[in-house]
Length: 77
Image (cartoon, rainbow, N blue to C red):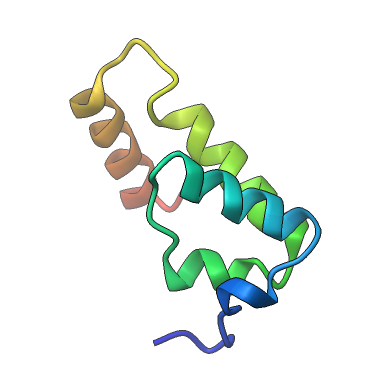
């Protein structure tokens, strides 16, 4: 449960709408978490930039990417 009310798909506008539409075109799920971040477009854009920089855009492979993400999260990153 989120404390911030998530956007509805048809409520998104501007930069948030572009990001959400781009996710849907690529077949990625649009979670309630992403929709809640959509209320602050710069925050949603930053989160997606961080995700794309650490997932799928490297030659590390999924297993190593997940291990690095887990390690960083476990150490308060």
